[in-house]
Length: 447
Image 1 (cartoon, rainbow, N blue to C red):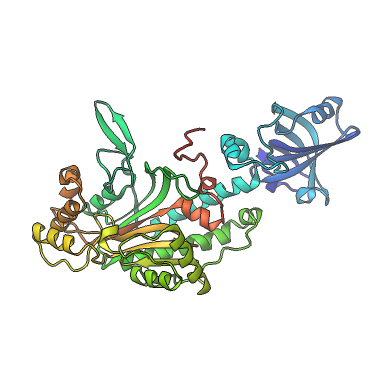
Image 2: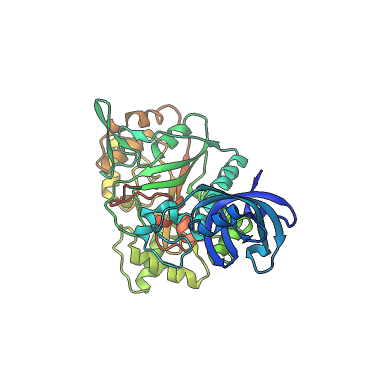
C-alpha cells in the first residue's frame, strides 16, 4: 500500500507518490524531493544503482510532475526527516507543463490574486495547506464538542423566501416561476426548532451576504458555527457555552495541530480564561478616554475595535465580550429588557420612545475583530410582532416563522461563530480570503 512521507521507516521497501518539489542533478546523481500531503522525502537516484530508464526519467522529469516511487528507505542525516529512498522504480503518473503559473517552493513570491487564481498550485505550499488541515481539525472537534453535550446537528435551507434578518443584503435567485434568495443566516430556522422539542441544535452553516465590501475582513460567502439552545435563563448561559467552545477549540489546536502551527511559524496560541466581559456603555467610556468618541447607539467602527483591543491587550486579553447593546443596533429578534405590556400597540410605542433600551445581546471580539455575535431571543409572539413593525419589516413576510411562537415557544438563545474570522485571528492571517479554499467576494467568482 502507498505510504505517506511521515510513515517511512529505514530498511523497509515502500511505495510512495506525490509531486516533484525540487530537483538537483549532479552528474551521475539526481536528487528528487518528493512532496505529498504530509511532507517531503528525498529520492536519491544514482546511475550505478538503477537501470538506464529510471535514471533517464529522474534526470528529465519536470518539477511538479506527479510520480510514484517504489524503493528502499535508508538513513541519510542530510536529507529531509533524516531518511531517503533509493528507488527500484520511478513511474511518471503525469508530467507538469513548464513554466509553472506560480512557484510552490516560495522562492518566487506571488501576490494574493495570483495565488487565488491558481489556488490548486497555491495549496501545494505547506503553509497554505496547513491552514486547511487546522480548519478540518477544528470542525471535527466542534462536532464532537456539541455531540458530547447532547446537541443535535441540523441542516437548514440555503434557499429562502425572505430575509433572515431583514434588510436588503440578499442575493436573489430565480426559483422556478418566482423570486427567492440565498440564505443570510439559519437564524429563523434555528428559532423555529426551539419550538419543536429539539431544544439544543447546531449547524455548520453557509451564509450569503450581498454586502459591497472590499476589505481584508469581509466575504460574500461565509461559513459559521451556529448554535441555539432552549430553556435558558438569559444570554449569560449562551455566552458561557460560546466561551467554553472557543477556549476548547484553541486548546485542541495547540494539542493536535503542533506540526501545522510550526509550519505557520506559531509556537503556541495563547488564551486567557475567563474571557473579559464589558458592557457596550463601558466600551464607549473606554474609547472616550482613549480619545475616540462613538455616538451612543452606533456600532463600533474598525478604528474603535482596534483601540479597544489595545486597551484589552494591556490587561492580557485577546478574547473579550461586549454585552448589553442598545435595541436600535440589534436584530429584531433580540431579547429586550423592560417590556411589561402584552399589547402589541403599547410595545410598539415603548420601543419607539426607547430606541436605546438595553438588550440581552453580545459580541465576542478576538484581537480587535468581532468573530461571533449572539443573544437571548424574544420568545413572546406579541413582542416579536412589535419589534418587526418598529424595525420596518413586513410581518406577512415572516408568517411561518411567527407561527412557531403562537403555540409554546420556550426562552432560548444562540450565537453564530464565523469560521473564517476565527481562523484569520487564530493564525494571524493578513486577509480573510486566505482562510477559504475558493473565496467569494464582490470581485471574485472564479475559480
